[in-house]
Image (cartoon, rainbow, N blue to C red; front, side):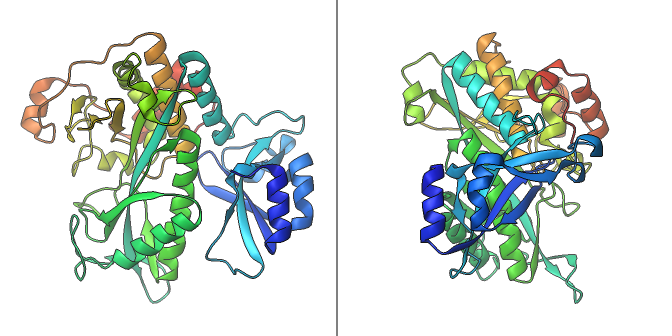
Length: 405
């Protein structure tokens, strides 16, 4: 957690030659511009200009000047670049020419949601993610194929699991960049892998997701492979999910244990998320293929929750921590800043208005006969349906403005 002065000292003392200023378009795709160390002081003071009209979802040409201001707390050495003449990265805040935060800066929208939760509800959300991806072989031209790196299954080991060394390399690289992975293993699909993260504050968790995807793509490429985060890479096989684990703590206390002696807010958080889940699905599941995944191969379809029930949309895990839930519908193509911001805004609504959660679902909703008898409402069935629901939502407009993926 560097300060501006510490970053300037670090750059001078550690032989840093290039500084990558990273930001995100509204889809969550990382962009960056590299500057030399001599320009860093100006970047902190005045920002570095870029053409917003060339970034997906940003501005039109007639008002396209935006400015990147590096966030010193996000400084990280890029460990796969040379150690002589180091390269570092910082995430940036985006401002307009009059010095105001840019309305489509999804990272800033998440910061605003965190601030509202703290100011209006007196709590902070801690977030941990579980992210799945496939590894595919390349053809002789270096283009991705649909031939998976292995044929292993859930939690198989080497020699069936060929991804063991790549996952290890990814985890080591994450640690070098200050990110703590919690677990890694082969997933259900052939060539499918999962890496899970310890909880962090919401903004750091979203930053970690973006750094993780960058590292995975880089390490896969270095091994002659292609990493695929799409929600349904192979028909008939398990899809890629990005489960979001949420717990809460009293603002200012060091861990979620700070919530254990307070009023139990989890039912209201749960109620708020379930109330608004249809409206935010467009942002949690932003591709046409997302809706092929939902409802198949253990991906949720019905708006529901259950204790220890992985067939429901939201699972409350078996844990000594009674302030935790797992949202199971998002997939890795979502913009994590927007996804987590929307979940926080739903939690705020749930807490402030004491929205009750519906009855717990104990049944196996992956059994179509059982599910059809229960009369539960489903998530949107297509991207177009989800888009239309989001467009009509006052909740979405108040949470993230006019952003569209």
